[in-house]
Length: 174
Image: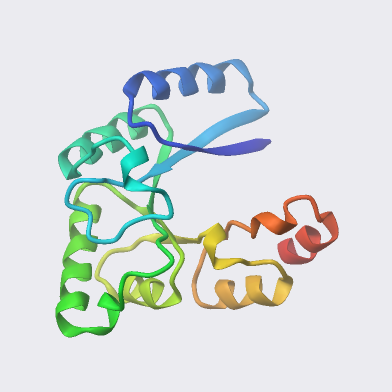
């Protein structure tokens, strides 16, 4: 079966269309959509905020419920390449943990993360998130992939530079 993870536009009509596609093509499935809030977000993503829909935690919670009711998961992206070293300060750590609590309460169960230090914080939080390594991690060989796997990451998105290098992709997947 071919599985697809699609960027979110946070429109319920898009989820309805994904559900129609899933019902029409039994060998393919849009199993997940991904994105992040733009209002009240303390950890940004790899995408420019001015190009994203204006979404807050309440909107996110409603959207996740709508997705779940249609058997489509949601993956929250906290894959900024840096967060100004907030993760290394006492107040930054406290605000990150509180933000993770808020995301969990909103229904988030899966996170895409670019920073290993942030992944460590996610793992030490009281919430049980599945963590996916972002393409921003630049995982382009089996050793890097194994390092992320050993750190507790459940999925990886390989570096874009090897998308068609099937030898490396096979090595990574073993």
